[in-house]
Picture 1: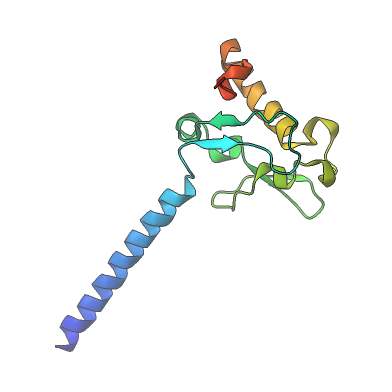
Picture 2: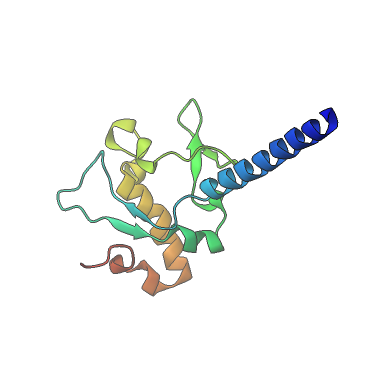
Length: 133
């Protein structure tokens, strides 16, 4: 009887860990679509960007877009599994970034537009990310 109970408990534990791990793996990928909009340095005329996250994940690795910073505020490359912070937590006027990366908008335009220009000039048009309503 003890063997059956022990085997059942071990099986339940293993299955529980498998389902939990699968759940975490799916969460690590993030949402399929994201609306990017500054909440710290709001624009007078806000132009949210529609970002198809899942579509970008098909072509890019997480570290192609995401990074972190060290204690001195210097950029540090993405490490698999790290917590992804909002871009504007560092890219805002109060953070003291360089002029080209001062705001979330500046950082996104520097990162996204440059990549889009390399892919296709049509992808670098404003309406690709900022569709008209």
